Image (cartoon, rainbow, N blue to C red; front, top):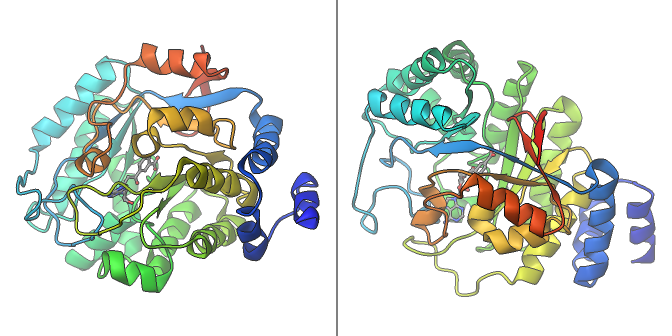
Length: 354
Ligand code: V47
């Protein structure tokens, strides 16, 4: 263990096995290692943005076991917003101060290809300065397959329609055996990585997520991070890594034990140490709870996502995030936890220090 700690302190890259070993360290010692890296880069700054999540449809041809959001027997309320509804939500959010719309849909085979792209075009027309973060690699794979397009064609259409950056969803866990058990049939791990690589090669940026706390183990998490680290070495296009804590209500993936705060914080800290080439580690409060996200600031995380305004994916599975958070409350919480709230844009340019 001493050798690994020395490596971390000397900013040397650690292996999957060394990352795994770090779980054996006590939480506070591990936290300090991660916190030192965070402090060197960002001091006491904690980043967030004023954003609006929009989930335009929950009708999905795929059946991921962890998902409580898509319309199924457990959630029999299918919907697909009209283009007008989507644009109005974006316009209203922009008027209220949002700088980003984060648009993630289900894989809806009925609305047509243009419904996806027209919504982006119309939003860009109505609010040219509003950053559009939209289409996960899982959605891109779905659109390519459904409409017989190459990934390149879908990615080019995104750029033409005004999409600015890609969110990190759909990554789940890259290990193929686990992936088969939780989301068989959707974008494969290799395809997810290829789509992000192609996006980065267009000079664009994206995020990467990891869904953890279900049937995966610690090795799977590190191996997942390793695939991201390898791609980032090639492209340098990932802005943030977002470990998503699994929410277990209203879905078909039975998990008896909920992760302990200890395990969640250790995973954040190890992500900060292991992913030496991804600048930001985001504690997405919708899945970790805001309380733990605030503590995570001392365990390597430098970003808390944003005010969200409305959220349907994690809240469908039990998270307390359906209505987002008021800006004043968000800023106060960060300040009261001893950090400096810094509003950023979607590409991490600083906009306002509170
Ligand atoms: O990929 C689905 C996850 C993701 C559950 O890029 C669940 O900035 C927990 O990707 N428990 C979509 N998570 C959300 C997402 C995201 C969120 C915040 C910021 C960014 C970003 C991206 O939600 C899916 C899936 O992994 N998810 N069901 C669940 N039961």
